[in-house]
Image 1 (spheres, rainbow, N blue to C red):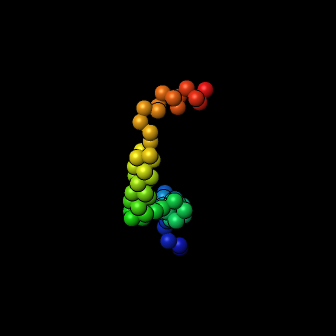
Image 2: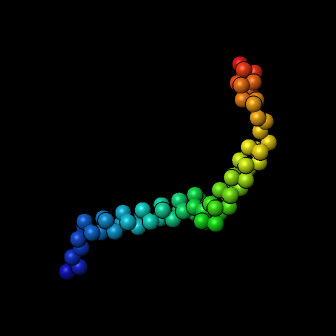
Image 3: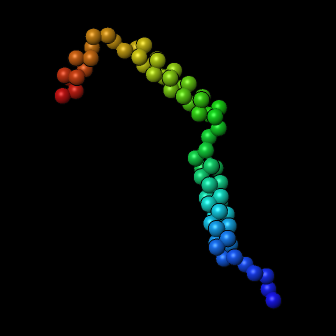
Length: 68
């Protein structure tokens, strides 16, 4: 006779393996290291500070009226 197999456990094991394969593909596709995320956040903060520093004061009202 063959070995007794619990089908529920086999089904769950297969689902876990499939989920891990999908997760690995997503990590490769979308994943970034902490250093990469921090570098991007620092670069974005630098760009915003540069833009804010170049902003002219008292011109917000004029900008709203000219966009029409």
